Image (cartoon, rainbow, N blue to C red; front, side, top):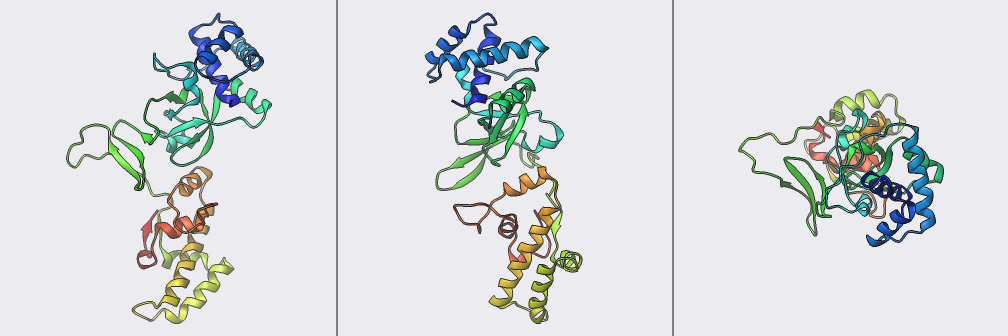
Length: 278
């Protein structure tokens, strides 16, 4: 069983029954279908008791009244995250395993947990107060009051209204990750300092006077676009890089890994790449 998930499960039981012994906590976890040893529960129970004795704790996970403690290892919804993680608000996530016992203890003392988001596939550490359990179906990857992002077999991702929406009502507004990929502007500024881009521009120069690019020129233009996207990605802060890598990638191998340049290439087609926001 995941160490971090066991910590959350034990904390939930102790919140409901502060005087519960380790043996009683173990019995409840077993009754709820969790395969965990009594020794593991005793160890985690001691950590929870020690953390509680050191000072007040943050607001715990919001658990529905009917939810068992084992729900801590099921799906969570993130909300109220700090500014650097605000782009993940609304995403559904699962608790991931702490790498080491020391990391697990650090997370516990900080009232945090490590989670993996289901939509953007980001592994992040978030406060317990910013997580709530959800009984949403497994195909829901994101939800708020207006809409949910759902995975549909054979159709990919889609948006589903959570309530009756009025005509012309604004339900989503986002700022572009990096403005626009303006090839004319980007190549003039980046080409002078990037040898790879400069070489590609030299190869493209013979086709510059043509009204329509032949296949050979389109192939070079795709390489230019991928290089500009890569350089643009490298200038972004880590939070925006995570959002960039969560975008669709058509060109990287199915077995991965995703490449920033190919994500940019998949987002903008060569025929319309002169000024397209990401």
